Amino acid sequence: MAMLHWVADPQWVIPNIIAPFIFTTVALTLFKDSTGPFGLYAVLGGGMMGMWGNTLYSSGYAIEFEKWQGTLEEVLVAPSKLLHVIAGRAVSNAVFGLTNMVAVLLVAAFAFRVSLGIADLFLFTVSLILTLLSVSALGLIFASAFVLSRSAQALTNGLETPLYIVSGSMFPIALLPFWVHPVAYVLGPTWGVDAIRLATSSDYASQTFWVGMNVNVAIILDLTVMLIITLAYAVIAAVLFKVVEKRARIKGTLVEA
Amino acid sequence: MVESASQKVSASGKAIVAEHLCKIFNVTKGMLRRNKTEVVAVKDVSFEVDYGELFGLVGPNGAGKTTTIKMLTTMLIPTSGKAIVLGLDNQRDVTEIRERIGIVLGGERGLYTRVSAIDNLRYFADLYGVPPSVRDRRVKELLEFMGLWDRARDRVETYSKGMKQRLHLARGLINDPELIFLDEPTIGLDPEIAIETRKMIKELVEKGKTILLTTHYMFEADELCKRVAVIRNGEIVALDTPSGLKRYVMDTSVVEVEGFGITEKEVARFKELAGVLSVSADLGENKQVLKIQTPKGSEIISEVQEILRNSRIYDIKIKEPTLEDAYLRLVTG
Image 1 (cartoon, each protein chain N blue to C red):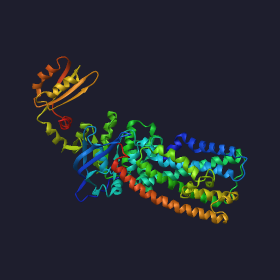
Image 2: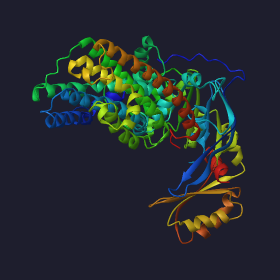
Image 3: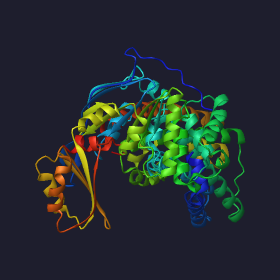
Image 4: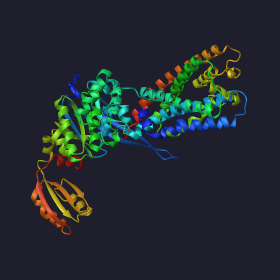
C-alpha cells in the first residue's frame, strides 16, 4: 500500500534515483584514475544506499506514514501482526531500491565507461536477493524501536549513513578503524556485499574476507554467514515487536488520545 | 449484498461485557526536569451489550468514550478491569477478537488517499485475512452497497466527505464482522449524508450485526439506540433506554430562551437560581440560545425577564424534555 502511495507521489524519485546517482557519479569522478575495483565500490555503494535507505525509510517511516494518513489505528487493530505489515513494506521497499542499482549501473556503464561484466550472473542474482532480505530483516529490528518512539524519522536519518560505511559497500572495511570491524561483521549486508562483489568481478578476490579460497566457495560461505545472521535478526525482530507492541498498547503511544 | 454474520454466542450470552475498565496514562512533561503526571482517561466503566443490539455511548469530549472503545477493540490494554468481547478475553485473545470485529473511527483520515477505493478495500481485506476467492467479490458488494462502485477506481482524495465516510463504513465491514464499533460516524457530515449513514446503520442491525456507537448527537442516539450509556469523567453515570433516560428529567421542563446580547455573566446568574437544574448556552454572534432545565416550568419566566432585562429576548418556549436534556442534566449536574 505504501508502495502504491509512494509511486503516486513523484517525490520518490529523489531518494531512489537521484541521491544514489549523485553518490555514484561523485565516486566515479573522484576515483576514475584509481586502480583496483573502484567501480565495484562506487556502483555497489550507490546500490546499497538505495536499498538501505528504502528499507530504513520504509521501516521507520512506516509508522509515521500511517500516522499522517490517519490509518495507524486501523492497521494496528487488524488481525495481521504489525511485524508482518512492516516486514512486507521493508521487503517491497528494499526490492524497489533495486531501481537505484539499475540507475547507477547505467551511469557507470554509459557515462563513465566502467566495465562491469558480471562474472557469475546466477550467484550475483542470488547474492543480491539474499542481501535484500538481510537488509529488510535488519530494518525490522530498527522498526521495533520506531514502534515505541514518536521520533522515528529523526532516528531513521541518523542510522542511514553508518550502515553504508560500516557494511563495506562504499570502501573496504580494512580502511576503517579496527574497533569498527566487529560491528561490520555482525551486519548481514556486509557478507552479502562481499558475495556480490565476488560474483561480479575476480578483481575483488584479493580483498574478500576469504582470501585464497575458491571464489564460489567464498561466495557460499558469505551467503551462509549472512543467512545465519539474517535468521537471528528475524528472531530478534519477532521478539522485539511482540514486546514493544504490548508496551505501546499499554502506554498508548500508537493511538491518538 | 453483505452476508449475514454467524454469531458465536459467548458463555454469558453477551456480545460485550466490560467490567470496571480503567485506563490511566502516565504523561511526562518537561525537558530538563521531567514531571510525571497521571491522566485518568477512564475511571470505572462497566456495561454489557446484547447480541444484535445497537448500543449507544454518549458523553462530552474527554469523557472517555473513545478510550473505552479502544480498550474494547484491543488498541489499548486497560490499566485494570476486564473486557470480554464476543466471548473472548480482550487481553488474551487479541487476534481472534480482531478477526471478528469491525471498527469505524470515521473522519476524513483513516484512508489511503492517493490510491483508489478498490485498492484501499483490497489492502484491508488482506490485512483481515479475507480469502482471495472472496475478497474481490466482497469489495465489489460493499462498494455497491455504499453507492461507490462507479467511483471505485478513483483516488480517495477526489471523494467528498460523505463518500469518504461511506468508504470508512465499507472498510469497517470488509471482514463481515459480527460486532462493529462506530465512533461518531456522522460527525461533520451534511444532514442528508448523515441521514443516509444512519439508515445504513439501521440496515446493519437488521442484518444481525451488533453495534456499539458513540455520538455527540442525542437525537441520533434517541433514533438509533436500544440503550444508551452516558459517560462523564471516565465513569458511566446512567445506562438505560432513551425513554428511561428521559425519565431523569420528567419532573422538569426545558425553558428555551432565544435572544440577543446575552452574556456569560447572565448565564452564570441563571445557574445560581434556586430550582435551576442545568443551563446550556449557545452564545453565537447573531443569536444566543439558552436552555434552562427546571421543575418550575413557566414560573421561571419572570426571573428570566429580570435577569435578561438588558438583553433583547426574541422568544421563550417551554418544552418537554428530550434525551439531550436528560444528557445535559447527567453530564453537568
